[in-house]
Length: 418
Image 1: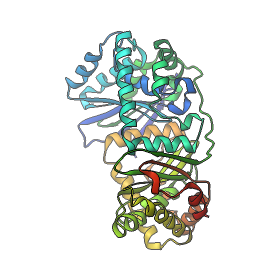
Image 2: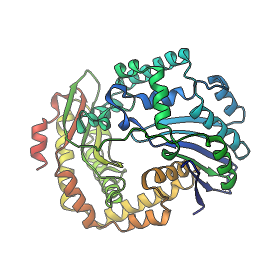
Image 3: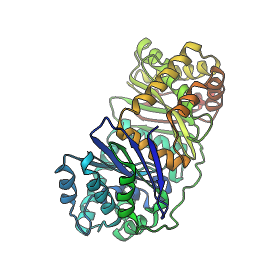
């Protein structure tokens, strides 16, 4: 493993992963704060801040930020999740210093210009509207909200129209200064990068950043239930889920194996039964959405109004079957898929950069590939069966959107899964 970690005097952690065969470097700053840290009245502020960070600093305009990166053929972007916010750049190896300088500038010297702020709020509101108009997207927000009602983890990452409109420049500035602090930040780089030189660049750029006590995330308390919304759409979009596992738990990789067997590819049980045999759907899959404070295990499917009556009972049948029996060949195939996914991700510098930052934020250390592969290899039929019984015996969460009149009732769903 070529990864190295250095902790700066102010607590900011720096990790590099050298790949000598490349001529590029992926680098970024990962901040351990996201939507699940937000009070209800400012839901969406992490995502709005991510947008505003690119809209001008004391030394660069929004256009200059974009042009300086693109002048050297680079790429810059950002992403907000429930637990983290990331800002990342990809450049040629000789332009790493420029990348670090721009990241340091936007994360410490943003001005939140009033005109840019008003304009970008409108952009975010358009993004929220687009999400609402995208049923196979918004149904996941409904699912999350129903699984964790009235909790930060259950609120949408984008926020709502009302909360975003209510966020002021002063609140945004205060939120950034309170939470973008060195001990909850990771500077990561992968590619043709020299560790000592990257550390030197980061330390120089971020040395004045002082630590403060930021917001903390509440524990996620799963409740479950139903969100059913009848809309004049071509398809019913449906998510069925259960309380899942924590990313730091012993059964994290077991849950991934379970998800792969159930709905992780063309050979999975759901794909073969629901799509290939019955022809009920175009898209069906399962997912293991693990987080540091718990998670969700779920199944998504999109189907027609008439097919909806058959869909949920068929999905329930597959859930009941996997609780009782898993073939050894299914386990071997699922473990091979996961192993290949781990090794293939190591071929991409951006994925390695993101993975290293995520490991440091979540575990406080790096996990090497041998440790991960060993955890996958240790998964057994018994472990997967035990986890399936534990997960699928819990109260379900059902979110469905579209022409839902034929979808099995929630009470019948609960009864069938007993």
